[in-house]
Image (cartoon, rainbow, N blue to C red; front, side):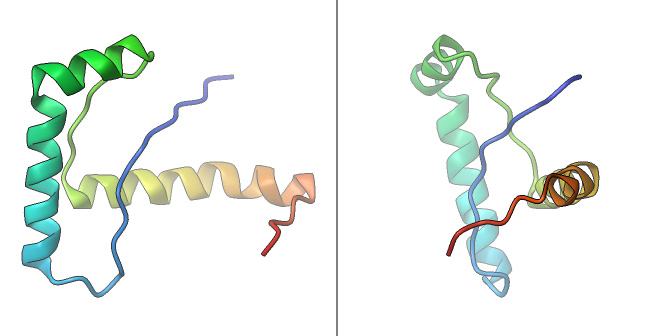
Amino acid sequence: MIVDSWTGMFLPAKAPEHIVDALNAAIGQAVSSAEVAENLIKTGNTPAITSHAQFAATIKADLQRWGPVVKASGFIADD
C-alpha cells in the first residue's frame, strides 16, 4: 500500500482570487527558501509548491480514493 500525505492551507470557499493568489505566492516563496526547505527535508518532507487548482485536484482525488475506505471502516468524526 502506498500512502502519500500533504500539508496545505485552506481559505473560505469564497475567498477573493487575488487573496488566494497572493497567499499562494507568499507560501511558495517561503517553501522555496533554503531555511524552510532544509527544515522540511530534515523532517522527512519533500518541499513542493502547487497552484490552488492543482491542490484542489489533489484533495478531490484523495477524497475519491480514501472516502470509501473511511466509510467502510465505520469511522465517525467527533464534533
